[in-house]
Length: 340
Ligand code: A3P
Image 1 (cartoon, rainbow, N blue to C red):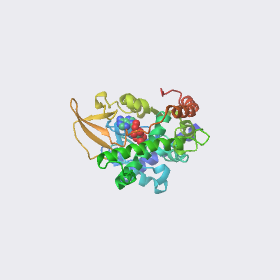
Image 2: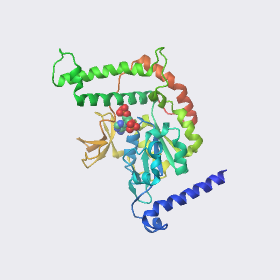
Image 3: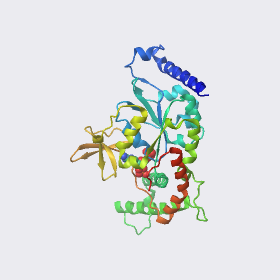
Image 4: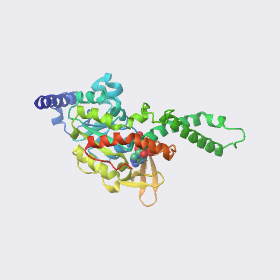
């Protein structure tokens, strides 16, 4: 069985070299034009999980010159598979021959058809999965919906319309209405996560995503565990360089992401990238000037956003709900993350 798999893998590798070099006109092109940039299918994919820090992981990995990362979520294996591999390759950035092309689409992790589809493309692909405490992940996911809604309401100026006539007008009005909207979101979060009998509603999509072991089991039947690298999303926030070093090892690339590349931004509560260039042309990041260390580039305001407040009783219910899933996850992983 293993010999057959090995043969299939070799056929794949031959095919990918051939197809990747087609545009250069010759099967020998990669050897002759070793320094020519071209688009390649990814050799590594960040498969999830949604709201666990996938963007930070990709952005920070790009600090290593051996990485060439697709900036948008491509959603090839869950939504665009019918467009074919040529389309998929077209979505990738150009890369040198020795670079690792990588994309991230967090929906892959929870879409049941995806593992087999990825395997059919490349059975030796490297998969990266970042996971964070499922309770925080759920709150982050829900808070994203709330803040998107508040933003769009704000744009339509509907918030002001809904206010009682006694409220003052101007900036303070929109601050008040913002607080009302977030207070309302606390009630909605309860309604979303709890059934009328007070039990956790595990049919809710955002609740289900945090039952990580359900999905990881499926990936493990399709790929060997040494093809899947797990990143602790909580540690990624506190100590990004440590997690990135492990990813570099997994990808087999030189350690090039150094501690001095990171500056903690107390205002944002997250690490940002130390840089000497002020660039606000990237949609997913924003530059700040730091008194002692020059300029830092942080992820956009959509990352590290405000969270809906959840009372201790509901938090404790959610923790109990996820506990058996976490324990099973850690046994599948063969290691434990320190999620308090
Ligand atoms: P919140 O915005 O809820 O805090 P994803 O990129 O997968 O959507 O994950 C978003 C989450 O990444 C953010 O959720 C934030 O907590 C986390 N994150 C991790 N490192 C970060 C960093 N350096 N800057 C901003 N957010 C970071």
